[in-house]
Length: 250
Image 1 (tube, helix red, strand yellow):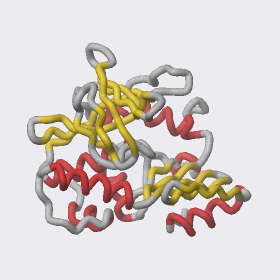
Image 2 (cartoon, helix red, strand yellow; image 1 turned 120 degrees about the vertical axis):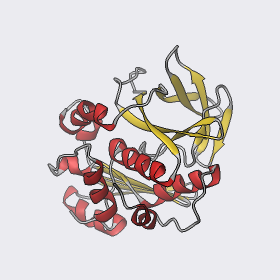
Image 3 (cartoon, helix red, strand yellow; image 1 turned 90 degrees about the vertical axis):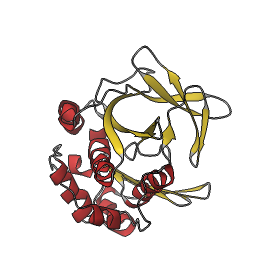
């Protein structure tokens, strides 16, 4: 079990809870603004286990972040604890080779509300700021851009980010409900394999009301109101930057 009140305090959510779209949207935005996306445990030799109590301790009590299995896995527990009908789904991400990754590569959520399925995702880095109602072939405008769902095949739906010039696939997913432990093998792959992008470099990133802050081994990127500042530094300064910009000490 998780402590819902402590969770809400961690993400600075103080509004009254209602099982409606406004509350769901505020919960997602509050989470994205409060809990960073990060892969630091992979680079510090700390195993990431798909156990909700361990994830809760890391993110809520130690004020850390995580990647999709942790962030969306824990957020699913919060939503269900409050009274939303939320479930885990498996997604396959679109790569530079224009292929989709294996099943269980990404964990996302679907919330069923007002007779409609809604995609919820707080674990994909820079993605949508708000939940996205799954309406095929319809442009859905979000704070971070425009998105379109379309049918990929008989079992999977695709979510695309749409700009004026092109539509870029993000991932495909089915609506089949999954259990957290079904993602175990792929979670281990991302911690150990040289073929996983998560093992290549440290990354931590968090949304801000007017932009985003992203830190890797030797670069700090600060985006504010459409303007971007890139600061390069020596790798031995990483932990200093981590403390300065994310208030995290490892």
